[in-house]
Length: 230
Image 1 (cartoon, rainbow, N blue to C red):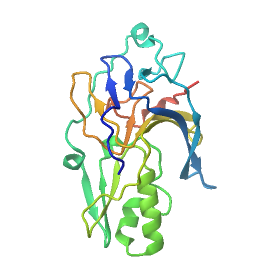
Image 2 (cartoon, rainbow, N blue to C red):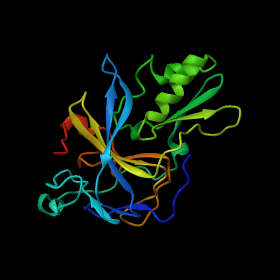
Image 3 (cartoon, helix red, strand yellow):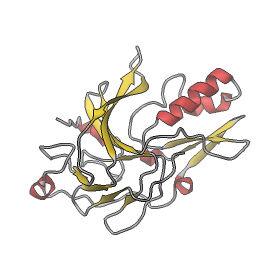
């Protein structure tokens, strides 16, 4: 897992934007589908220019997306944070396979659907002694942007996490014809509006459509409302 950089963080402002400090790189991250429409890979777009400190819209109403333009005040955005503050493992359900285990916190699901191909990761975990299944399992779990799913090496007890650059992705989902969450990568600290420090994780998705019931985290609502980052 990428090491946390102490000089970067994202702070949730009360009923307002995400305040980003530390000159964190910003780019589109597009879900690439296979021939059957299943999520297969990520395609990174060009870097988006930004100052060292910037504010990202979380109400979904800004006319200058992904950046805040103050629209949260005009629309009376209620950004109350409702997500659990318990550590990931306190919320997770676990499944053991022969070589790897899988933990799952369903409330963090950002509906990117990398879990679905090849018979779904929940079924693959039972066959992780098969090299081909194991390869697909680890790849698909690590492509889950929200970190809902985490793979574990049963021998070492350690997470099996791809190293990710400290960066923020603007998720685009052509299959669902919508824009998705902010994808925080590489262990970026997230600070609540009241100063609470959420657990630092390698993969985190933050709501930017304003509709999540699990704020500040994404719950997949962008797909239901067909949110567009125009």
